[in-house]
Length: 263
Image (cartoon, rainbow, N blue to C red):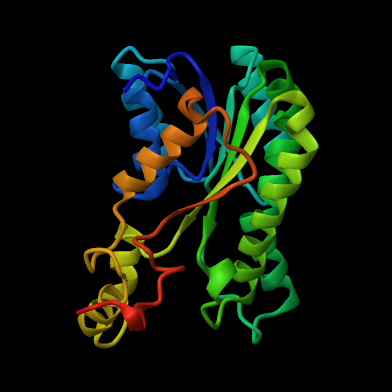
């Protein structure tokens, strides 16, 4: 299916994770669809990824950006607009489940909000004039933690709850400009960071199997590729009448009554 993303300028945050991460997988799939990715991330992996893309003769841009700093976000978004003259899509994907719980300091809690929520607001704020001109759309990466809780991660949970609130608020605010705003809700996905976490905890393999057995559909984790596929469909013209939605790609993790499922 042609998603008609060719030459669309897609600003994406948090796309410089490890190979196989959700952001990096979305990035590579944007390139396959012919989109022009503009990566905002603090990690220099973003520079490497974009250079590899450019070496194939494909246009792309990397803006090294501390997404907890307003001035850096504003500068990066303006750099994208200056180079391309437009932004067609914003994908707010950056996020770290940083474990800022009730025992965290005020400063740590606020830093969690800055990265996981406030960066979403600021990126859209500064990209908005370009989005209005292009009648573009916004896709926010959400998490089941906003709906189910997790324990020990007040900052991340509050931020992801806020992301869902912003998604619906922007859908209302921007409908007059033909701008769509949606969120993907992710539960358990096998990423390099998830693998590192499993390896770092006692009885990690046992914990992993316990988690997998609680995922209703096929007793397996969602792959980053499955998330990327839904992401690209949602930002494309093939999803042109979808706005204000929380779109779940979680194998039924959030909504299905696992006690009622046959083993």
